[in-house]
Amino acid sequence: MGSSVGSKGDVHGVWVARDAGTRRVRAMVVGDWSAATAQRLWAALPRGYRTRVTVCTDVLASYRQAIPRVRHRAVGQDTGRTAHIERVGLTLRQRCARFVRKTLTFSKCPRNHLGARWYFIRLYNLCHQ
Image 1: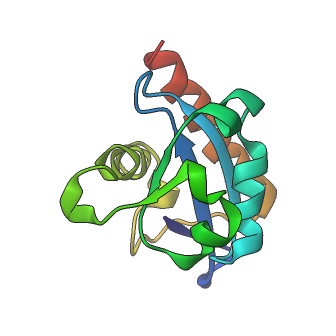
Image 2 (image 1 turned 30 degrees about the vertical axis):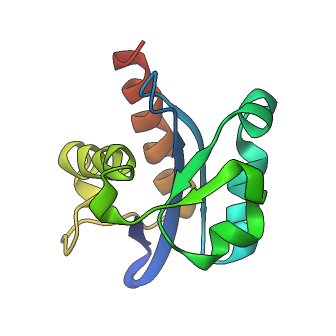
């Protein structure tokens, strides 16, 4: 998911890791669509997740470079395995005006933008306890 900071041309990618069983967000990072950002997301996951779970992602090549092969499964959108994480993005856009596509409102400060995102994630996780 992408969102703008400062101007509509300054788009930041939002990477989110969600537990499908508990429906809680476990990690989030902001950055470009590179393997380095994917590696930051992998490192942000709790250690137990990195050693025991299978991660289902879309087919973005950055994931293959960051997630160990035994833990990673790239799936297409037609499988429905990515629908849970897409729902998080849609819920964020419904609840926060600054994240709506083609919006008139956007964050001017990257720190406030990230803070609004984390505030949403914490409320989202509280609703899914």
